[in-house]
Length: 148
Figure 1 (tube, rainbow, N blue to C red):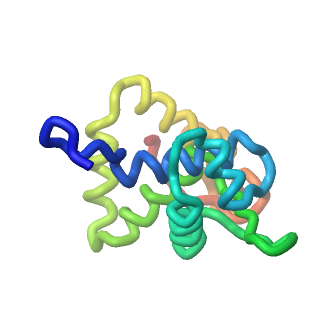
Figure 2: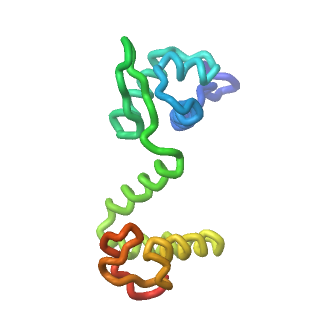
């Protein structure tokens, strides 16, 4: 299936992203056949079913069995999935402080401002610090005492 010496198939990650996009846009659980139809390109149903099964095994989608086939729904939106990947990468490291420091140092000024605002909001708007027991949901705060 080579054209001009290159493989004409799409990269695997792109197909996975397209499958997730189809699930997000549907707003309801879809079967592998429905996802295949939504993608609108010639794919085997088994290819789509395999991708959905792997996404389910990885916790990215949940499935139900309303009839003879499984129907799949995403557990989170795109931003939630990206945040989960970031959190998992952070959890792999021994020196989390260094990883966070390097991450923050690579942010644009705009992203840094957004992060500062989010951290202030998470601390109940206490100007960058919070006291224990004063988290945004009434639960324990983060105990941060220095501005971000």
